[in-house]
Length: 477
Image (cartoon, rainbow, N blue to C red):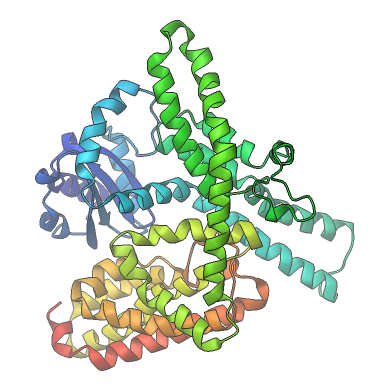
């Protein structure tokens, strides 16, 4: 099937081009924001030749899985048709006001899920930078180890090269809150540079000066201060930008048109900055420490049973969380851990979830070959390479989820890999991608252990699936 036909057939089932507000490509999925859900034929989309699965139920967003090789091509077709990309920015306040009620009407799930989605949308554009930064950090550490051990000679050239690698890895993380502020502003319909100003303020040294002036600064132990530079991290910045957006909107309505461009941003900042500095930063900083300490009770426990159960549950339950959108809540936790320690131990455990899908798919392929189901064999063969690399959607939405039970057995098998990497203390400097590609941002001393965890997930999920999934279910695909 041609890409043009695939794109058109999907569009027809979505209610036509006039029913599309915007769209974007996401790894293996075309993510479409529709205007009227009643015009969408979900089953019709699933029946389109070339569609591997459909994810709906998250407001007015429909996600169509077409695979990593086609998703960008389909989106390119939509762009040529005039469909606006989701990332397309607009400062048109009137348009935003007109769409407000329609957008709110489509968000039927819950305010909690909406908040998680917003947080996810803030961090998603930064994933490529997280990957580049994480890989560079890992390579920088590995390069340093090899230089110290004498495997690589230590000279001016190697030291400069190692420093450049470290620069790539550290630069993004050093100013992460600024990038977070910019993206948060886009989500809250605020000028992105104003959001960046909130992020920059959060790490400015003048925060410590202010804290000292009001008696909140602990000079001996700055991290124990009520207020200090960087307190609250990305969560504080997101809340600060949200407050600024609300204030800016109010000021804009009150400000005379002739003064709007010059005075609205300044007045908004004057009103929002004290709230951010004296309320949001101390509060979110306090709760960030509490959250980190709470997770540390399980992750850093000296009892291998506790850490093993924690890892098992993280890997086994991660994909069910993905289905209901709650996995987004882990994104700020990953970020807080990377901000604080330079790595996260949560991600390597949840990364095993995709490996479980691969193991289950291998077992299903063996069964499909035995019963002669060539269609299932073809779907699995097409999705396995992507699954091994960490892109699990083709296997999830094209194989295990439609059959239901294999989706469960995959999670049960993945849990063993999650338990293993958690007990072994595997840590990652980034939180995407997963699969074997994640080895590029796993701390060097844990790479082989991480890959062993993936292998454990493959084998465990394959065995459980092979034992508990009957041939009759495979034949019914």
